[in-house]
Length: 210
Image (cartoon, rainbow, N blue to C red; front, side, top):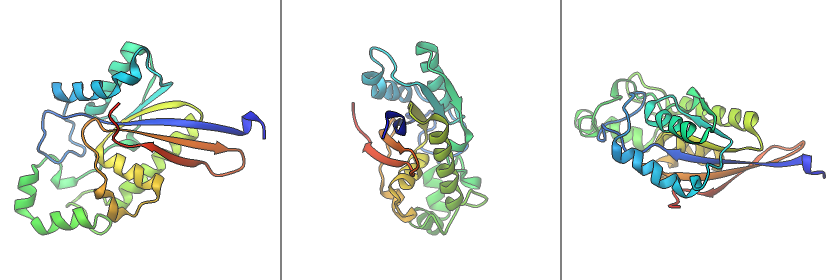
């Protein structure tokens, strides 16, 4: 086997930090980072950025709690940024932007069912979780195909990261809520490619504090 037959793609996955609206269900609602949330992301990446950003490409959700931070890295280090709507957070429909307390109070049964059985239940007018999971898987495969062999920073959302880890680890949808993804959570996946074979993803770390 020659060196051209094998390559590795490294993807650092960063969740956005705290937002100005911290107690609501955030899907497509476009709320900005709080000052603390920006600092959370900065603190998490500082060991990687110093002395220079290692990434060859940044992929980000279009929502400002992700894209604004990606743009700042671009301004500071010149790393190219691509906005990818495939990595948008789940669309929670009528529930989007409402507080957790309100949702629990108004429909505690459905709230519990969605959390425990997301493959069967969805918020009113929301994106079915199976569709969401398939969308994230497709966006991930597209990223690997387009940026194979590079070191990538992907900035996205908590639900997206759970779906990604489920796709990578072949985890049942019912178990994804068991994965903790706090603000500014940092994970790394390496994808190994060998000519003529399916690529093989490997979770290197999750929710690490650099």
